[in-house]
Length: 143
Image (cartoon, rainbow, N blue to C red; front, side, top):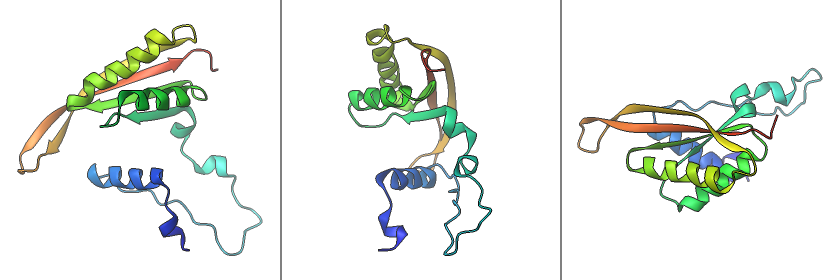
């Protein structure tokens, strides 16, 4: 089997997201046949943002799926951002409030809220502005 057919679900979702948002995919260096003696450590190859920050994009799944995903990320990261656009903004607020209100003993709190709009081209070719919200949830127990 070649490595292209062995893509994980996460890689497929990321590539689809990059295609729909016009983001050029980043190509990770592939392992060579002969390993080099002076290879750089893997930790330096990854961007620093992945080590300290993660993003949950709200879509069409049930709300509890996003609550579970956010709580899973908060177990190891100090800040997780919940992002939604358009009609899904209310679900992003619901996700953040479920975590804050029901898990208040654990020490989760809203760190920052950012609102903006994205300019998208609709199916009929018209340019439309779509509202966007980003909610940072902080785990104060993780240092």
